[in-house]
Image (cartoon, rainbow, N blue to C red; front, top):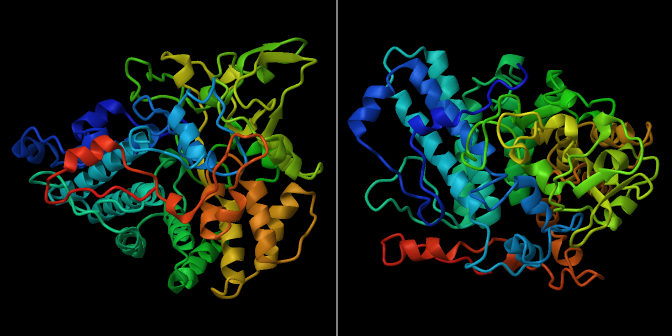
Length: 511
């Protein structure tokens, strides 16, 4: 089977979920003795680890908020619009896009789900100590996976909210924890990640039976992402060493055809370092059980509404006809690609009024996101179709490894074949063409390579380009300019209220 770590909500229940929204630090414990009796075998520890992976699948729905990780950052960048019916449809998306989110109408689903992930990872690490006669290799691998996964959840929280509670053991008492400054969160997260990496127990790449687990290469990519976003030059050398280790391992390579990366046949291909698995076959995800195992709602979100063929289009090319029309691609994004760039067609689905029709929605451009668009042959499921597409979400690809390495060399981290790494990516898309090595050309390559993959917004911030790039547009959709005060989203007001008067009262971000 191609997706072996498809997460089971039934297993997740065994690990006891954190509560949501305003009580994201709460842990429901039905009896410590019951837990200590249950989590004493390797089999049950494995169940807890699977439960720690489970929240990775939650982000696209996020308790009816719809917070797919890639879209929630990209709508704040400059390559897609928000779309939907109008500005009131997922209104907090539109507020985020215009840098005017408010505590009473802001994104909360990722906050809740990521802290649920943290809680479950902490559970796993605690349960290891309860499991007698656990083989050392199993104990170490389980611990390393839980720590890397926990740091992945924390990285999401740190980038979106910055000043968050950070803890590595689950909470007791009033179930709150001191709020840390963003730099303190980074210090804790990166130190823990270094510790997990230094255990050297995870494979550079898992075998096919274990696709979906965090690997050593995934940990290296997470490390480079955090270090580059923090602009932590003291760790640039180590990040470069990690990228060079991936490159030198021979486990990964670029797929020859860029367009194949995002096909089902491209999932966990030679270029893929980490993906979030979704599987529609036997998918049980439904509107009555949205956290059930199964597929993803992302293609429904971004596919044209009421799409119909006006001509003879092959069945395999037919789009799903119940899309919601969110996140259309900007015309400027299509136009930035050279006509010979293979990434243009693989990134942009350009509708043709001579052969198809659909219901245009707000901010419609007639261009949609090809990478995750919904197709008719990708919706077979026993659950609700809208929620069960088979598309894995690509998180880290080998092309990013090459561009990370090239950037780190250019920024003084050390030596390496930076020009070759840059041109491996550039040439793949443009038939072997080359560009000169410079930071500006690396920036341009990332801009073209990762449309719709949740990279662009964070890149603009870490490069210091956000204040000059993220400015009012000519259409009147974005009327505000990004500023440093917009780096961290506001916390939901309900969360602020829930900690009021407690020793660890949460302070609102200045937004």
